Length: 108
Image: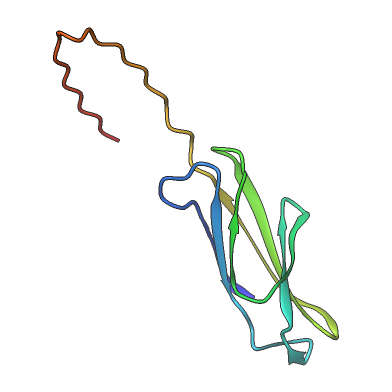
């Protein structure tokens, strides 16, 4: 595999989207599937497509991703990379008396 991208989806602090380009062959035969490892732990044992959504991750944490192509002859090419989840958004708690107007402007 090549062209590994690892990015957090907009608005999510505990997910990463990974995509890659599959080679047409590995070890001289057609690709059957891919294995996806996160921090050296097998997360998706068999993946036909070239995208995966990693869920239930820790906010603001870097994750190492490895994708291995394989077929009936065994493992083939490998691509690795790293991506970081977004930080968790701060929580805001407001208490306003009912007779008062409050205008708030938030910017990122």
